Length: 115
Picture 1: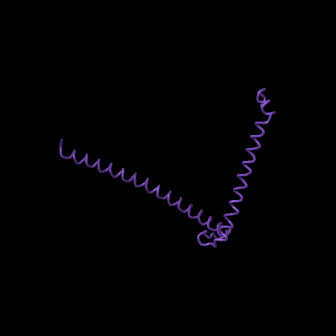
Picture 2 (picture 1 turned 60 degrees about the vertical axis):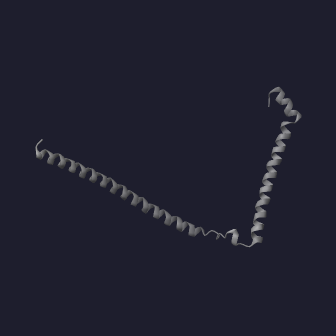
Picture 3 (picture 1 turned 90 degrees about the vertical axis):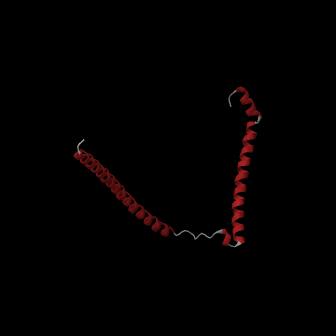
């Protein structure tokens, strides 16, 4: 093989390498521009959310650890009473359904297959 064939082969390899690097660089540039555009949209959305949050002006949250104990315990009692009432209502509903299922009419209907 003559010496100039090696120069041609290496020249082609270097040009191929440069083409691959250029294509990869172009793809990375496009992805970076898309990411920058998405970041701009995200910042705009965050600004709108911040404005909406400031317009709502919710109550300032104070952790239970630094609130007065009487206030926290009163709040807990209200929640506990509501939970107890829900449990009692579910219990009563289950008992009523059980009474309905074991009533003589329900037993007779089940025996006839019409339940």
